[in-house]
Image 1 (cartoon, rainbow, N blue to C red):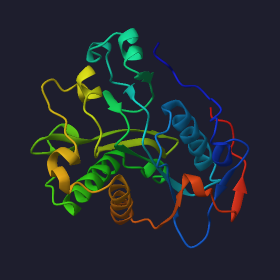
Image 2 (cartoon, one colour):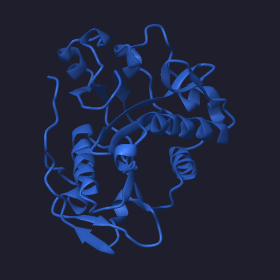
Image 3 (cartoon, rainbow, N blue to C red):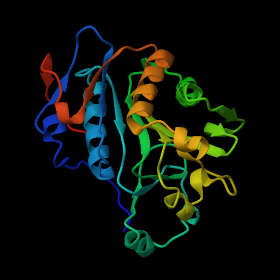
Length: 262
C-alpha cells in the first residue's frame, strides 16, 4: 500500500527529534548528522520535517542529514503511476516500501549503499534562488565524483549528475517558507535491482549507475564517500558544519523544542 507520510513519531530517534531538538550556535554555520545504518524512510522523513519546522522558526541553524535508507521507492510531485513497473503487492513482496512525497521530481529508488543528502537550509527569504540551489546540488555531486577520478557532468533539461555509464546522482527537493528539505541521492555501492522496477526520474531508456560499477575494486568505502560529500558541500555552499554521527548524540550548546509541522 502506498504511503503518504504525515506527522509521525520517529521511534528509536527520540534523542534527536522526540521531546527536543539540539542545535549548535557556536563557531560553525550549522551542523551535519550522519546515519551510518539504513534508516526507515518514514522515520527519516518525520525527523526531516521536524528539523524543517524548527529551521523555519529560526530555532536551529542550517542542518544537513546524510542517510542510507531501507529499500524504498518514492514519487515526487511530478511522479506518475505509469513510472512504477510493479504493482503495490509486488513491491511489498520484494520488501520495497512505496511513498508519495512532496519533493520535486519524478520517481526514484533508495536503498542501502546509496547516500541521500538532506540539507535543511534557509535560502534567504524572497530572494531565494531555487534554480541556483539546484545547480549547487549538482555541483556537489560532480565535484565529489571528481575527487574519485570520475568525470561527472550535467545534461541539458535533465537534472542530476551524469557519467559516461549513466545517471549517478538524482535531485528532488522542496522549498517551503524559504527553507529547503529533501535533496539528493548519490549511488555508491547499492544494488540497481530496485531501479529496474521503475522508470528512474521518468526518463525512459536512461541507464543508472553506481560509483562501484565505475571504479570496481577501487571504489572508496561508504564512509569515505560520505565525508567527501560533506567536504564538497561545505565548499560549494560556503558553510562550515560541525559534524556528528547519529550514535554520538547531539551537542548541548542549545536545546530547543521543535514547533509542530503544519
